[in-house]
View 1 (cartoon, rainbow, N blue to C red):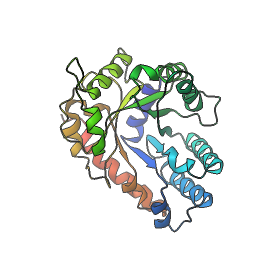
View 2: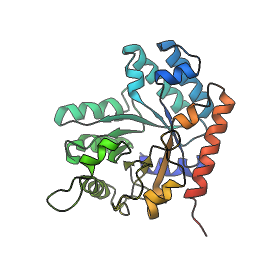
View 3: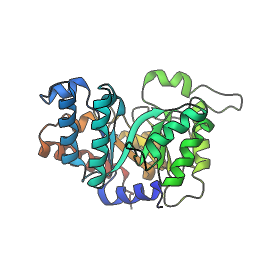
View 4: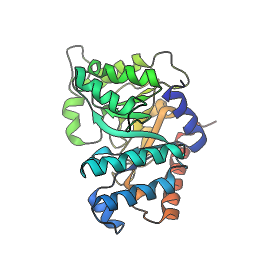
Length: 279
């Protein structure tokens, strides 16, 4: 089976370097004139898929905004995943799961086993029970051509107290996570399947991303304050591996399908201008 890293590399080349989130929070449903109900959720998700599902490399549903409606919301999430697959989008489910033993194995089965109704191309994961605790996710992803994006340096201000804490070996917690993911990707071509989440708003980090060998998901662009130009500061020489992620900057253009497409095209163009190699 073709690896997630290879599929992502091709999708970014063909559709451009862009991930768009599906984040149907109550304020956004209201902005679209939709009720804060399962019906509103379904209309919102279906419109986003129609507008950008066949135009961007990766679509990232935020699981929590579906889960809050219980079983009916999860059913909409399953349907949304199927719709995105039907139009050829890679699906990155933003779940930020992390646990140990049989529990993390169950999370892996839920999202990375092709027999699951929630099967996606990749998931986000939290490493704060130790990167090694995520081994069942890494193993199942590798077995079925999936990917895992591990939190490393996030945009929220609370994250720094943990992520930049220095361990006995002189490395920050974040650098330890970076180094361990780098080991998982060693030798992978053209791109490893195990990525990192590094916020676009954090500025120059003082961390070494040069050996990661996998994709670098960069949320925080647009409504959260970062611009495409900020990617140069955060990622430096690692820019070719960056997957910029926008949500509200694109979604606020809805519910008009043409406006959503135009917003996605605009931010993708901004990112291309920054990420394209300079001759």
